[in-house]
Length: 62
Image (tube, rainbow, N blue to C red):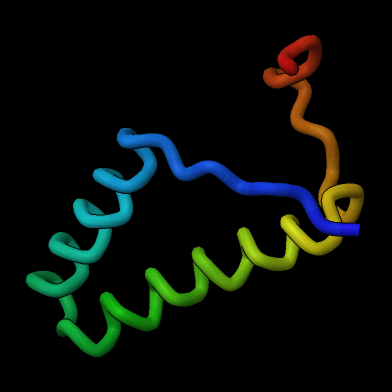
């Protein structure tokens, strides 16, 4: 069972910011690895939406 993941404009910008930061602080190769790991984890949650723990701060949100 998979769900649809919508990346908001903010989350897309934050991915770019993360890439830019680590590209300067470490290297473009490391920055790309970090971004790919984030995207891979989102894909795991897309395929298995009940696999993660519940975040208390998000309770009650749709």
